Length: 214
Image (cartoon, rainbow, N blue to C red; front, side, top):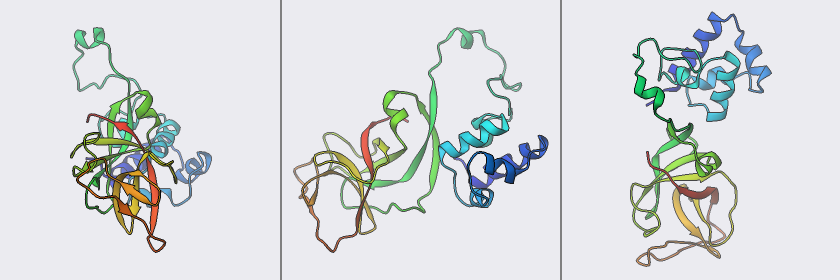
């Protein structure tokens, strides 16, 4: 698990070592002046973390605390060199935000801007590269396509087409459903569609584009 305050401490430490002013850095990479204050209380987005790491010329893994070695593409001195590792092809990975609080494929669950976020490495593929975050499925209403506990890849968007599957925030509850005409549809026939009315507070959080193994 990664903690935003630990990341803020790492950023401050390496910036001091390299005599880099944080305010100047954030301005040059297009981040706000309150970035450091925000880092102390909430996890940064993956692209924000990558921009900071690139400017500081260190690895994202170092900022996340996954290694004590800030150097990029260098072998950690604490880890012995194993010949087999050199000859074994390695898969490229990317880091994606992972919402541990799941969206429901059932009766609904809470998902808000304050939902805790972790960051996790996943194999780089066409679908993971297109995704903005990962969500865990809770419930069985989207079977047989998605099962309870599946991790789905979500591309952030404010709207999707009918018949597409998305993540919806309906009256402060989150759902993974198929978009219908004035209704949210479950794939499991045991569940009735959720009818939408003009009084409902609903927004689309993203389009589900696939699943990923964690």
